[in-house]
Length: 391
Image (cartoon, rainbow, N blue to C red):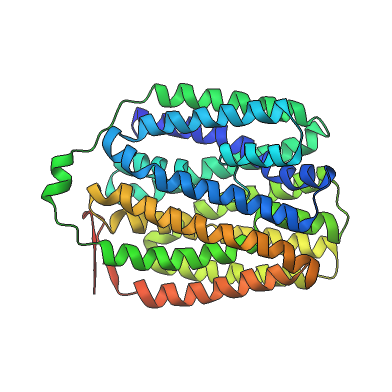
């Protein structure tokens, strides 16, 4: 990895550490200030819609000025978000701060940072080592997020201290991005190469949207709320549970890097994800808190193996000049689709049952796995090439 790639990892660590504790704190903090499940669902939806809008908006500036300038601007918004959280505890101002700061409310990160950083890591890595590099990139995020989730348990009720840490995290990101070299893609190169990957990108964007729509029913914040309501778990207990999920998610990334060269990107991506979704449904059927936690942890040991393999597949399936567009489109589709379900989840939890989102999310994800396998199983991606061709 180059120096710029290492700086990306520093920024990723600072950001996801904060997202780790904020993702757990966010629904409980709002509930303690009078919001019910429906309002919390709407709050999560608004946060995701803001993230989707940012992801859509950064594509052209990134192509024109390079990722560094846009990442600096996004880090500045995190600082503004932290200042707003410190200034007021009004629930809807807290939601506004979450929207400005692109707060991650799931176990994995989506949005503008992911879009730009995965491109930076890709350009800094040899083709044959791309899946391993992206596994490391995601692993750093999950490890930092796990420690952040544990910080909730250690910090107890000191939410102001955690918001101060969020502010410092934003400043660290600004410093890291400021030290990166500007990387402006050649406009001439973009015009010279015919765009041939758009049909595949659109198909993948549609499928990824289905996966994220399903994932929106079982975001970390909503799963934390389910454990909090169903079993009466404390904030400290939730912090340790999601510390465990993040650690196991990190291990799943290491497994992906080891298995992908043997099983192939597609097989590793699809079959690990399929099994994890069966376990997700089983969580809702658990009669006790300890069994639900065990099933959730087992699910997370497999659930993220598709992340670096999916990212690697996408980056190798397009020309270099198409990567900003491909990453932006697929991440916008994922975030937009994910934003629909949390508000619906709040209604489902109060009107149907607390466990219903697990069945909706897990069932739709299984449908996604089967459709994805049928779509890309014949697509060949060569490690030495910059695009994939459908067989």
